[in-house]
Length: 495
Image (cartoon, rainbow, N blue to C red; front, top):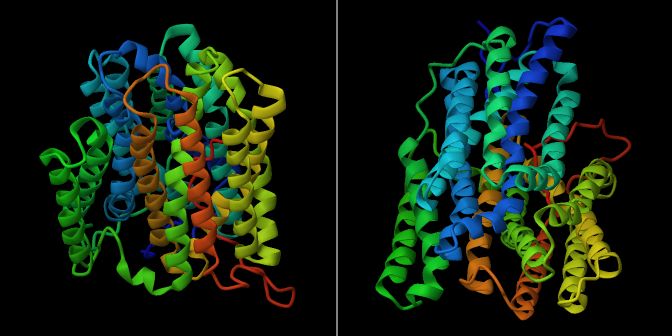
C-alpha cells in the first residue's frame, strides 16, 4: 500500500503516485468536491448581506450578540481546520467529507429555523465545524483522483470555484433575502449539500486512511476555541458591560491564560493544532503576522460597508448586494495575474503595493463618503480600488506563508495561515462592534469614518510587517526551474 501524503491545504491523504483515472471519473469527483467547497465558501460572504435583515428580526438583541452570527463561524472554522485535515488523513477523506456535509446541512437547517438568536449563533458555530471538515477533505479527495502532473491545475480550478462563491455571495444573498427573507441564505445550502451527498456516494474515491498516525490534538482545538471565544466575548461586551467590569476582565484574562496553556500544549503534543516549529521560518512568521493584522481590518470593513449602505444611505438589501459586488469581481479577475507578478518580482513589493492600495481606497471612504448617496462618483471608485488591493494581498500572503516551507509541510502551513485569517476576522468583527456601538440602526457617519480609518490602519500595519520579508522572497529566476506555488483554500475576498 502506498503511504499517503497530505494535500496542500491541510486536507486528506494524497497518494504519492496515483493511478491515472478516466477523465470522466475525475470530472465527476471535481463536480462533487466543488459543490462542497462552493457551499462552505458561499457562507463566508452570503451572511454579511443578510445582517441588516437579521438585525430587524432580532431587534431587541444588541449588535454584540448579532455579531456572533459572523464570529461564531470564523472561530469554529479556524479552531478546527488543522485537526480536521489530520482527522481526514487518519480516518479517511471520504468519511470526513460526508461527515462535514451532514454537519453543515443540519447546522444550516438549524440556522434557518432558529426562533431565537441564541439558536442561530449555535447553528453558525456548527456550520463552522462542518466547513472545517469539508474544505480540506474535499481537496484531498480531488487530488487523489488526478495524476500528479495535473494537480496544480486542479487546485487552481478548485480555488476558482471558491472565489466564484465568494464573488457571487452578496448578489445571491441579496436576491434570497429580498425574495424570501434571511432564513433562505441558510436553506439554500440544503439542496446543494443533498446533491453533493447523493452524487458523492457514487463517484468519490476512498483513499486509504493512515491509521498509524497519532490522533490529532482535539483538546488543543477545544482550548483555542475557548480562548478565542473568551477574547471575542470580552471585546464585544466591553462597551455594554464596562471595560473594567468583572465579566470583561474575566473573559480577557481567561483568554490569555487558556491561550498560554494552548501554546504550551502545542509544544508537547506530537500532532499539535499549531506546529510551533513552522515559525522557525522568518518568512512564515512574517506572512502570518501580516495576515492576522490585515484580516482584523478587512473583515470589519466588509460587514461595516453593508451596515453603512443599508443604514445610512438607506439602500435596500438588493441594492446593497449589487453595490458591493464589483469589489469581489475585481479580486476574482486580478488574483491570478497578481500571483504571476509576485513570482516575477517577489512577494514583498506586491504585498506592499496591495496594502497601500487598500489603505488608499479606505481613505477615500473616510474622506469623501457623506450621508448623501454618491455611488458612481465616490463609492464605486473606492470599492474598485480596495478590490484591486485585496487581489494583490490576500492570495499572495497565502502563497508567501508556505513559500519557505518544505513541500511536505505545505499542508499544515497553509492551514495555519487560514487559521490566522479566521482569527483576525473574528477579532475584527468584535472591534467593529466597539467602533460602531451597540445600536443596530441610525449609526452616525462619524463612527463609520472611524471604522474605515481603523481598517486603513490595519492595512498599513500589515504592509509594515511585510517590510521584514526577504527582498526576493517568492521571485522565480529565469535560470531556475519553475516550482508551482501552492494554492491555498478559497480566500474570503469580499471587497
